[in-house]
Length: 192
Image 1 (spheres, rainbow, N blue to C red):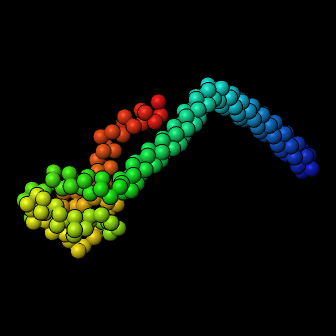
Image 2 (cartoon, one colour):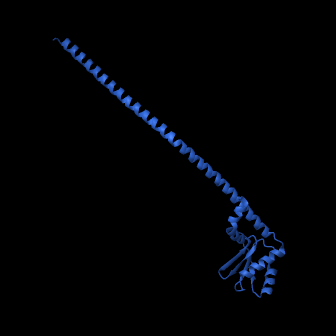
Image 3 (tube, rainbow, N blue to C red):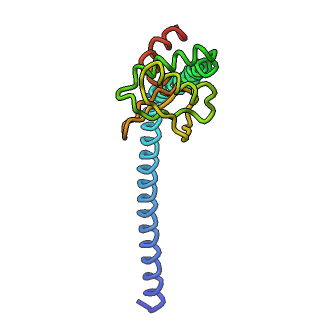
């Protein structure tokens, strides 16, 4: 066999091997592509199935969140209205007629005094509870209360101090205490 024939045979055998390898690779590529496409379809079907199952739950959750938001807004409005109602009550107390204002303060003072030697603190804008009021109270109740020069940031009423114990009889505190006691009933009446 001549050298040219040997080269031709090697070349032909190489070409045949290359074609066989390419054919084998093409088969492997087709098999991998088929498997990948099958996996893709399986994943897509799985997601579509999950979406079909989960969509009603997602919509239900959105509805629940929307209801909670609506209730939160409603609660905020109700709390604001309730706050306004109690603020109006405080305003009425502050704007009481002077004689009623002083009588009410006298009644509170009678309940709050323990030794008769306490110090009385009034608000910075107090118009009715002054030294003349203290003097009148002391004379009619045989006490020795003193009016402090220090004013407190209260809307009305007073704070009675005995050593280190304060008895808060301010209108603000009375409204806050009353609010805690009657808020449920007020809510029922306002929003029934």
